Figure: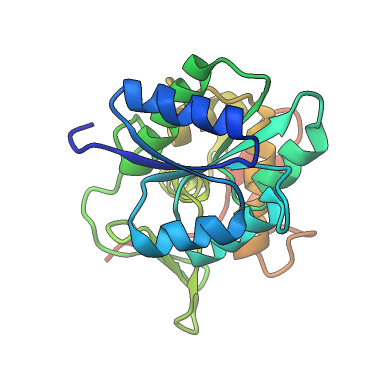
Length: 239
């Protein structure tokens, strides 16, 4: 990573917040610490950050609400901090657009590793396939612009994608009408260095279906192949 990274830490526990900010600073990452959503908004207005770390339990707007709000604004990478055993929060966080999560209590080294893994996925320095050129890719009325990392509907509206959703869609586009296992999708979409578990692919597929399917309850573009994985069915056109 050539430029110095900036991470925004949104955590109301002062001790944890200061620990993370200090640890990241010691490892060459500029970190800003804030205690709630209002301070987060103010920080994002003042400067550009590369990634946001969001605690789930925050005063005022909780982390899940902030995650959804951030995702509506664009593809800024997000890592959620969740309490040990709160599996429901982790699933909801992924559904709302978080790219990864870390459970408390956590080792700062694990958090640093996950930050680097998420940023590798977001800036393209991993094994996910890329188009031969940066021109648009069309399928089922949608147009994906890889260079801009944008998905555009037939009516011209941009459908926001998280970094994980973009990489997953690109993996499907490069392997149309092939049955892809969860393990294979992890390698294609996130790279072998990603520290994710295979069921997170199910959550990301569900999120992607909600965005591109006419009826996500009866998916026609991303088919489930029971016991084997998923298949991307539409015809791909790249002028």
